[in-house]
Structures are given as C-alpha cells and as structure tokens.
Length: 86
Ligand SMILES: [Zn+2]
Image (cartoon, rainbow, N blue to C red):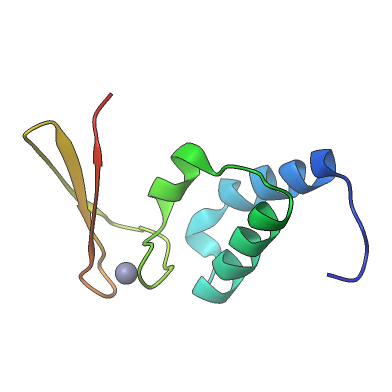
C-alpha cells in the first residue's frame, strides 16, 4: 500500500470488495483483511463470507444450523466455521 488513504476510503474499498466476494482470490482476501486491520476496521458480518482457514470465499456453502450455532463447511479446505445465532 503506497498511497495513504483515509479510514473512510478504506471502508469504502472494503465495502466494494465484499460486493464481489465470490470473484476474489484468497490472496486478495488476505490483502483486504490486512487493510481492515491497519485501519482498525471491523469486518463483522463480512467475516462470514469467507473461510478463515484458507481465506476462500464461501461460494456454495453447506450451511447447517444446530444448537443455536450456524456452521458453514468450506468447500475448499473442509474447515468448519461456526458462530452463534443472535
Ligand atoms: Zn477453507
């Protein structure tokens, strides 16, 4: 990242990025995560859109709901992400 951008601009970049998350590569996701961290921006719900193990976007996720938890199985690395239903 050579050019310095404001936090608002960083947020916009992240928003735009996640609109086409399915077309992104793990490498790009890694980059945007780093950007978010640098600007102290929380990805919140967006974190559910990709696998936190291999950073692949969840394209055809198999979603299971059990005991108040949502589980998504990554089609790429078979890692199971889970989080509590609010
Ligand atoms: Zn994965």
